[in-house]
Image 1 (cartoon, rainbow, N blue to C red):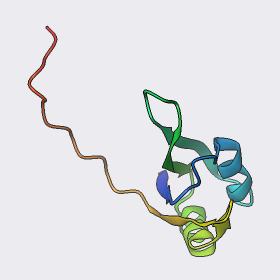
Image 2 (image 1 turned 180 degrees about the vertical axis):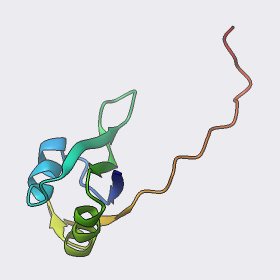
Image 3 (image 1 turned 90 degrees about the vertical axis):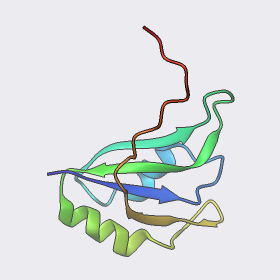
Length: 93
């Protein structure tokens, strides 16, 4: 079973490599994503880290929530399931 964590309050300069570095002590990290704006490619200030071990994910939340990264106090917690988007009135057939 895998667990995904939300990482918020990231600097807009933070990269996936920066997140990998801060989470490297947890060996079961399987994926790291920094969410970027489609139009500009600039970070939106948050990302996700996925773990193959629930225990490591829980330990990461405990030890990294509130830690400083690039002069910002990051927020780390379990990611909520993504809600489905409502139709915006345009559909392709």
